[in-house]
Length: 217
Ligand SMILES: [Zn+2]
Image 1 (tube, rainbow, N blue to C red):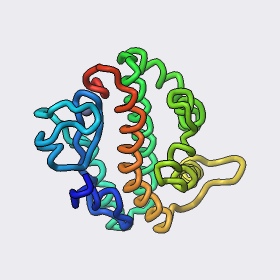
Image 2: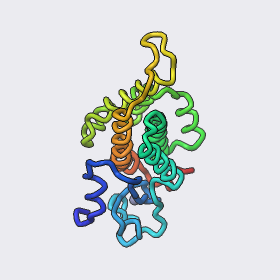
Image 3: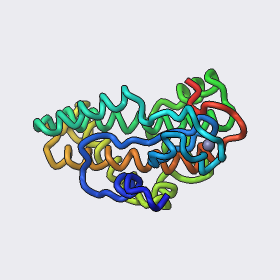
Image 4: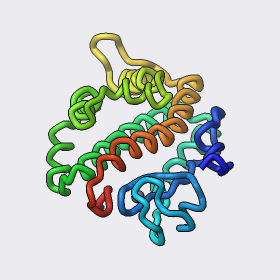
C-alpha cells in the first residue's frame, strides 16, 4: 500500500482538492481503498482477502456530481450556498456511515430505516446512535483517526448554517455566511471523505460477518 502514490495523495494532502477523491469498495466486506490496483481487481481485498472483479467506485456518481457543483459554487464565491450544501452533505455522510454500520451488523433495510427515522436529529445521531453502535464517542473515534478538530469545526459550521437559516429567538439570525466560513466548509468536505473511509474500514469492514453488500441498496 505504501507504494501507491494515489493513496499518498488522497490521505495526506492538506490543501483543498479540485474534485472528490476516488476509492474502491470490496463488495464482500465493504472495505474501501484508494489503491488503483485494488480497484482494477489486480490484488485481493486486504481486509477479507476476497479476489475482486466487481469493485465499485466510491463515492458514487451522484455524490461526485453534488461535490463538483459545491466546488463550482465555491469558485464563484457563493459562500452561503457552499456552507448550506456542505452541511447537508456532511449530515448525509454521517447517515451513510451509520447505515453501513447497521448493515454490517446484519440489520435489514427495514430495521435501518426505523433506527435512522427514530433518530433524525444530527446531535442525537452523533451523541447517542454512533456511540451505541460503535462503543466509542464520535469525537474520540475522529481523534484517533487523526481528525481531532473535525467534530468541533463541523459543529461551528452547523451552528452558523442554523443561525443563518432560522430566525433564532435567542441570538438573532446570522446575516451572512462569509468566504472564511465557506473555505472552512470546503476543508471539512475534503476531510470528510478520508474520515468516512477510515470509519468505514474500522466499523463497517471490521464489523462484517459474511454478509454481502454492506450498503445493501
Ligand atoms: Zn473485503
